[in-house]
Amino acid sequence: MSSGVASNWADSTPLATFEGVTVLMYQQSARYIFKQLKQLDKEKQLRGFFQYMNYMDRLVNSKCAAKDVKEFVNLENLTQTMATRASFYILECKELMRDPEFTEKKKNNERYAI
Image 1 (cartoon, rainbow, N blue to C red):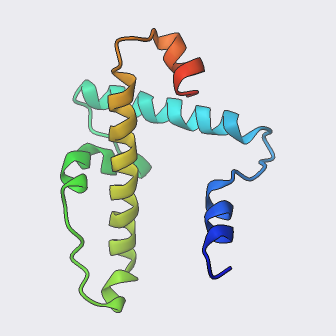
Image 2: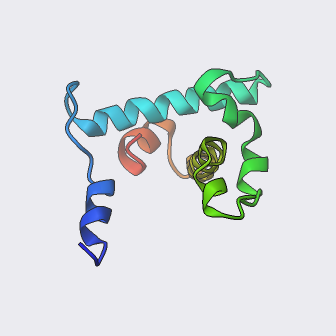
């Protein structure tokens, strides 16, 4: 356990869902996120859980303002940290999807399995 292998494995191994295969759940989630990105491209403001996507560029370029443990575990700091991490991966995937070598179908089904 002290090596971190077990915890890394547990974090990265998908767990079974009541809906079936977890890979399909990942694909559905990714498609919904890309749908939200299309709304942003139309200059519509997102609300609710996806509100952070309105300012992803600012998030990925920001620095953590927490100075001590109390500030690190503050719910607002944790929320911003998770939004920053999600923004980083969303922007990275968005860039990969711009690859002109593959059709939209091949990107979704073969190349990136989204």
